[in-house]
Image 1 (cartoon, rainbow, N blue to C red):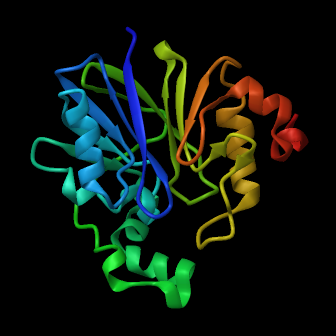
Image 2 (tube, rainbow, N blue to C red):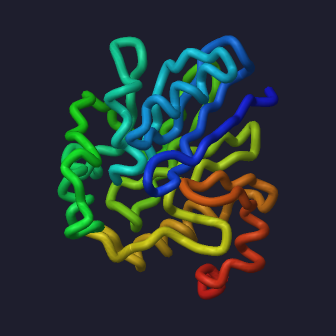
Image 3 (tube, one colour):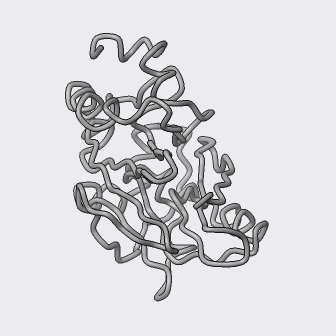
Length: 218
């Protein structure tokens, strides 16, 4: 299967929202939903796609804040339970991040009834088999989504081109993130395409070779 994969960088933090589908004109999965549901809607409309699920890598507002505008009785949303409380309170996150620049209108409380992601499970959504990798460190419930048949990893804020996710926010742990990296992410095949939550795509091989944060693991 050659998947249709498209993305757009949305909201204040230029978060990458992805859509994946077997092809145009059918069902699709959304991966991460910034507080810009219209932007995600435009991405779906571009390919005449209908969402059937939203997979959220973690509970930070720039990845989950738009879920309420997409999820419905026919569109299930998934999040690891360790990040559920975080996802419910985006304003607290923004106050911690932005201080006096925070505006109460920047994000509303997320009320979606999430299905729980489970480490190691394989979800079949829109006819696509997606493996869940629990990769705590950036947040306690952070997950990456691996499509082995396509050689694609949606890495959220775990791994970026030339960098890694920050661990100085509440619930973050550098040691835990690096353990997740060593045991769950870096063992993937080198030609795995890494599609991160921010910034450009990369590959596992490229990050093994040149990412300065990973050299201690290699």
